[in-house]
Length: 516
Image 1 (cartoon, rainbow, N blue to C red):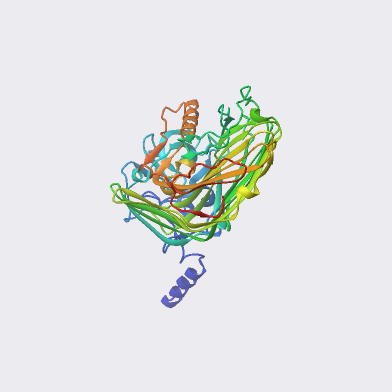
Image 2: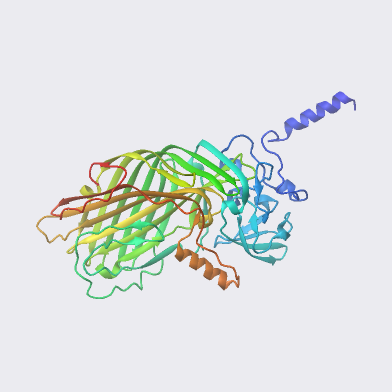
């Protein structure tokens, strides 16, 4: 064969190989050569952008994107970048923090407790235990901060469009702390006593006085996790549905943070510590709350529940080879009922518009927070509130939307984040009275940080699982920079009918045009 024919064959071969100009085989670490190389994850070139499901293998959709070491990032000395990517992961335990991987994957045999395991942006963490399972290894990990992975890294994502329809749900059905619920004994002279929850940062609101409970509530039927949570994301925004029907209590609630053409910006500079970090999600458009609650048993069916769904949503980002990050959306929901007597009901709908975005930044060792503006009431909870009761009834609901740009899963996800919390309190006086009274409170706040923060109750549950597995190591509930102080954006109470005048609203950054 002459030289021209050889050249022609080479050109034809290059043209026929699919994707040769888009992605190429990656090496996860210096030992990536070998049988795993052809099955490893492949990089995406160009500026950071959201990766569509169609661009990801089935394994990548389940287990994440592999790091591709290069000179732009320096890992900490105890980080073990295990080769093979998602294709070398056999399974993820339903509890969310145990990974079964190919024991022959490059550098897998180097893993020992105390080191940092880094296989994908999801399969990552401080190694707590390593056990053989035939030819595979079961690696148990705890949370890890970005500075425990990277000594030097510079990650910049600017106004990247986000399509939440392309977000990928990830569930861990045995995730500890999915639902923490218990009966709520009402205080002697209060339907909804003001209370601060250190695990969530949510403050609940006082309402009208109510008679003291004659007997202590019986929570036996409420502790069987009868709550069902359905977080969701899509073109309309990010939201959650919650329902329960058992133990004399029936609940239906839905909340939605509206988003229009959202984009995300992330800046992270690590040079032997974090020098700056920020996350901004633009496209805020409004908020909707819709709820109804009823009790057949009155006070004995009241409940105080912090609900943590077992499903998060991930948006994978291409173009950051050595530091693959994903945008993770997590939610939590709090419900606290105060239904005074049997056959009490309470329902309402609230719809509010606003605009702008959510931004949290850390620079010069200080925090800055900016939330949406221009709040207007389209539909008022105070005016739509209905119910039936022979005594005062009350309800507190809160939903927290947390958006993290980083690595890790569920409560272990670490990176710049903001938490946007909306809380509503609704109350109605007895229908025996001459003049009906409805009242509602709306509180909207934000906070942020860089790292991870796991509620104490869930930390304890995870550690109990580790103890049952005879793993001596335990996790801590927080890591990274100390979170910012909360910013109260809206705090307003409205009442109609024969209510007592509301207490003066706490200071807030923004005003709400129209009644709550």
